[in-house]
Image 1 (cartoon, rainbow, N blue to C red):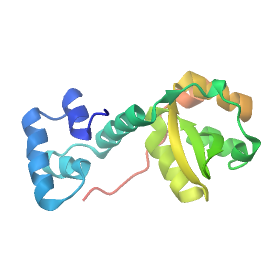
Image 2: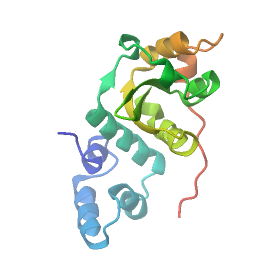
Image 3: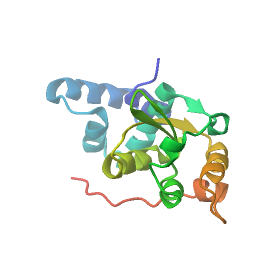
Length: 163
């Protein structure tokens, strides 16, 4: 069973067990997401909440090696090479009318935002180790000068209002 966000934040040392229980008690009253309450009550950074969510998602979805998959041409035609490298995503195949995309755990929130706002296909994600994703992207979307360094460097953070 996948850990809950609160458990992950406690394991990371971001919250104490008492803080986690305080948020859960508040959550029963106001019915707001755990991460939102952690931000509000304990000033936990939205980036830390996103990282914990991505860790939880990875536990549920699992990690694959995209080099072991045959990439369907219909899937790879859904994005350009620039988009694949910029957003660190690899379309793999369609399953029941949903597009399977691979990305790294570290890039999952950004990749999800891209797919939700820029792609018309219904998508779901699996995660991959950065070196496996870089190899698979180079195989499917070859671009000189792009590789593991591109995947491993931090993606630009979008500014967000916290309020």
